[in-house]
Image (cartoon, rainbow, N blue to C red):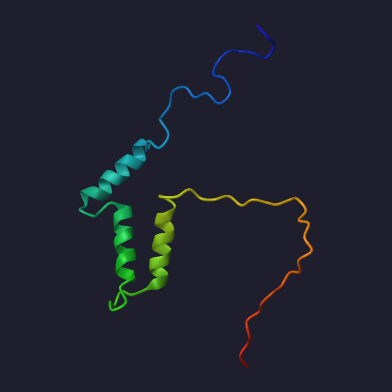
Length: 105
């Protein structure tokens, strides 16, 4: 047997445990308690709030609330992107042009 080799899983290999995405017991119980009260699924409720907050003629109109709801819901649909740092050199002779807004006095 090679030195340091004790058997077990190969690097990156998974054995046992919950499958990815399977909620743990407490999460499942909490969701069941919420649904038992007659409330909708939390994501459905958040989506409903977002839709109501976008109706311009409604007293619930609140675009900031709608944006926040959609932002929260988006993380369950699309993965979060990681920042990428560029460490190379950009070789260009083009000048950098900044366009600044005119300030009113």
